[in-house]
Image: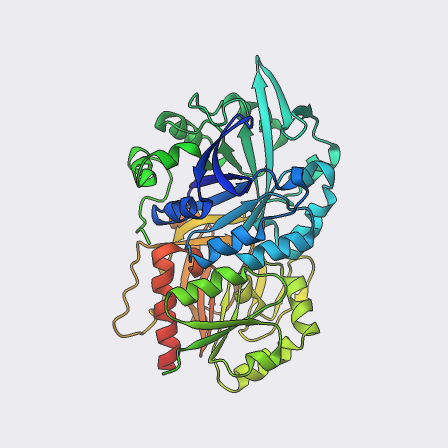
Amino acid sequence: MALKRIIGVVTVKGGMAVQSIGFNKYLPLGDPVILVENLDKWGADEILLQCIDRTILGVGPDYDLISKIARSGIATPLIYGGGISSVDCAAKAFACGADRLVVESMIRDAPKRLIDIASRFGSQSLIASFPVTLVNGIFSYFDYLSRSPFELSQEILEILKNRIVSEVLLIDSMNEGRINGFDLGILNKVRELQLPPILAFGGVTEPDCMISLLKHPDIAGIAIGNSLNYRESSISHIREALNQMPIRSRYESN
Amino acid sequence: MRSFKFGIIDYKAGNLASIHYALKDIGCDSKISSSTNDLKEVDALLLPGVGAFGHAMLTLKEDGLDQFLKDFVQQGKPVLGICLGMQLMSNSSTEMGLTTGLGLIPGHVEKIANITCNVGWSPLAYRNALNIPGTIFDKKDYYYFNHSYVFHTSSKYVLATSAANNLENGCEFNAIIKMNNLYGVQFHPEKSQKAGRNFLKNLIQDIKNGS
């Protein structure tokens, strides 16, 4: 893989950027376009825009929001997630301004469609998202819509093994929105599955946690959400703290 | 004075808006279309990235864009291919089975060695300079790559290479190729922040100079 990446995450609910805490509590942050523009200016390696209510509302991807962001002229790769359920959805999302897609519900509900999307757009354009929980040593994949655990089917495991998706976004659901740090035990639990390269999200707040993750061989990137919004040019401060890590050390703000 | 205008080919995949607004950002006009009528009057054509070879070639043929591109090139007009767009200019690709390409630049597209996908930021190793007066390519600049396949071609067309796992220990592949006024870049200049914007500006200047 190339250098490991710092991914800025903007979570959107009801069209507004929110601070999410455990997928349960949401505090408003403001216009998602502004937050994305900030991450672009501050030099994130990628920006993940996750619209978390699109599937549950049955309204499909937020093409308007993707288009607005594209019109702002951001020069940082945009990963979009939320409501992607078909090849046509994916095509329109790319046409509007997404550069990669992250899918979650489709993995459980219609995993074969991932194959169709990968055939049309390439595996490198697809990321599979798995919220997980690790509580008292018990690990499970977590469906945050029904708020219940689920098992990875053989079909899903085959898709991952055959690298139909390029990367996996593993979300530490227990620590999402909190400062406790991403639970590294999660990476041990999934090791045997030989997943594609992993992007870690959930509780990635402090430099120590980031360093531990970036040192892990299965990690391709760290996704950071809420904490990036509390400080101007937060990403450059993070890069300074991580200057011994295999990340992009040089960038110029746009 | 009319500004330079790209025709961005819509082959029903591609991150069309990203490249359109990147060009706008640097003062370059562009039109997105799958219609040969719409694309006739542009100064250069652009094959965008994000997609898979087989489906893209199928769509190009269905819309008559494969022959249109070949005729455009025969007239001596410039074409820029980005990522998959660069690969489409080859003779063939093994992505999803062997598929014939546009045959605009001799070469063949194959799976990148040793890894499934190359996603992320890497620097370039310049083989031959783009001879543009006043151009400064900072060799420490990083560019964003997102691909699973690479374009093998004669070294005489290669301006720069890159490597997954950085240049010291990774597998090298062609990052910038040029044959007459056909240009191919494996990375995404439209999503490579300031380095990418500078690259696009320099490239357009090179096209205008008719190098």
